[in-house]
Image 1 (cartoon, rainbow, N blue to C red):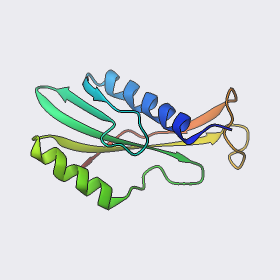
Image 2 (image 1 turned 135 degrees about the horizontal axis):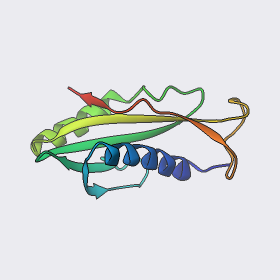
Image 3 (image 1 turned 60 degrees about the vertical axis):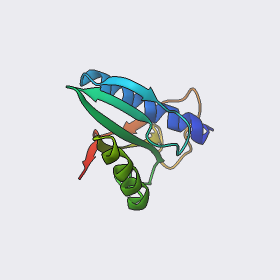
Image 4 (image 1 turned 90 degrees about the vertical axis):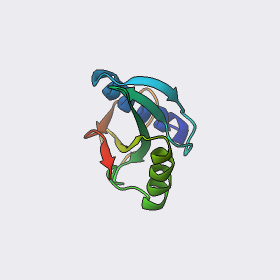
Length: 117
């Protein structure tokens, strides 16, 4: 079975690839579980903080802890940065009810990041 840290790393890769495709420059990358933000990026001379969370099916990757998000948003505003949330869902591709195992196919539910206003 895949560990929480390994699942988090897969979520980080998914979000990181998306950021790279959208021309964000990485200033800081933090892959430790629940150590926020996971990505601090620069784009068009503006600073962006990204919070990444990994979820196993049936948990909803769009849900987040508003207390943590608002705390980081306040921190980001001190640096003139925008804050974003990126939830990534994972499931066993053969049977969503089964655990996700190493070296077995899985599906990803990622619909991009959401700016926190």
